[in-house]
Length: 242
Image (cartoon, rainbow, N blue to C red; front, side, top):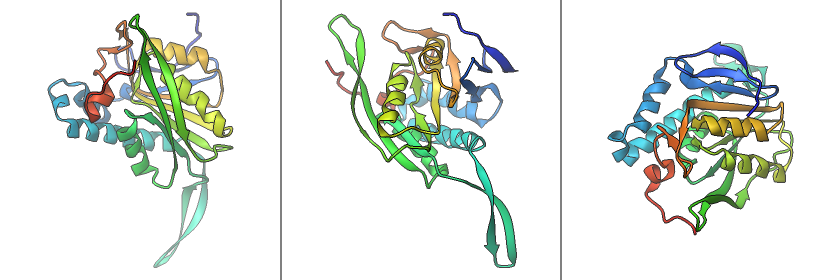
């Protein structure tokens, strides 16, 4: 694939923050912070045996993403009355809409909502439908959403593997209006998934937020080293749709 990347900040290992001709990509795992501790725990096969701990770490990672994304939102200074006077405080001009792809995105979504607690919410049902030859297609079922016209939307899905679920989720948003800006958020992405999103979503009002980018992916589109199936680890194993 022939993409032009402009490197903005050199991070640890192979991680980086960069932008192509339009979309900015921000990788929080570039910096040494507690974010990486939670990321390590959701990857760790021994810690994964505790689904409560796994969900809690997805929740906390969602909180940290929300805090970082909040720095890119628009603010206006407002007067706040205190018992002793008036304080001028920057306040969000408008609340974002938090969207997620069921079911794996629920715990992370709740973490985002804990911080951006006045946000409206949007839920998208999409899943892998496996074919007889071992492949799969992403099936879109339904969407529950407020109007998205002129709003900032934060669309989350913990794993960005092939990138097709995120693409379908992004396209689904436009059935409910035209957002002012869309933040796409995943904890772990494959390099192939990142390349796919940069190739298919060509818009200057989209930002891609990631925790880490892994180089490998299995024939069934699971990220390597990744962490496995986030939905199963959080909520129990499911029967695959045929």
